[in-house]
Image (cartoon, rainbow, N blue to C red):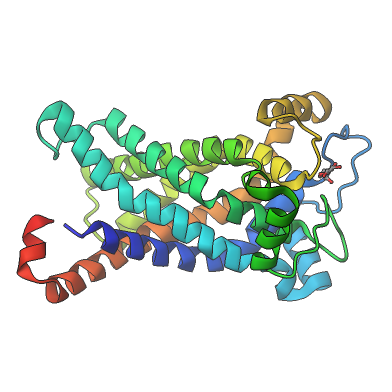
Length: 310
Ligand SMILES: *[C@@H]1O[C@H](CO)[C@@H](O)[C@H](O)[C@H]1NC(C)=O
């Protein structure tokens, strides 16, 4: 068993690797979610026509820099979120399971879902200010702007400006939908991962190893994207606003659906999928590897007295 700190570091490193590869799609997703906000389909101008078109347009006009806006914020956010998620999941799960079943090795779906959601929600709340600044950096474009154009020099400048003008409250704008979004995503990520893994072993006779990790995380990523996207759209729009366009998340959801139609909550879905699939595959598969390395390092480095307590 790895220590919680070990899991925290391992999970964070795995997530940052995944983020670097998929950040471009995240940028496109945010612009797709914001374009045509509160406009009927007929009047909305579609500057970005889909995932590939979006990536192409941004790359041609703004270069790689345009696609990678807000990357440092994404790193800090991922360290916070996935560190919490992968770090707190197992301790939470085993202590609750132990409490209920007097045996922490039992796999109870309900407990797994609860632990996944709780650790994700904690991470999302802690990381929300970084996600806010990231969203604003990514929607900034000198060529085809969508959303409010916030002029932040970098992540730190963004945090500072928001704090100076609006205080802590400004930094925590949109934290509600951010927690819901991540709660939805986290509550299905690890359970579907382990579920798919067990099924693939049992029914297809797959063995522990990289192909099994890849297949299980792909299945998990797809389900995560489906449940997470609607609150994600609400969150992006709450993060964009500076005034009080919406009074809250439900107001945003209601007015979005009313003016743009029910499918508006799935705007940018394919860009999200293009990000989440490789992200989940990389995070979960890398996590299996980094956890292994971390365990080896700890075995060598930690004194026996600490190891016995783990
Ligand atoms: C972004 O927020 C501003 C308010 O700050 C609002 O006027 C605008 O409609 C929102 N959406 C877009 C796509 O600009």
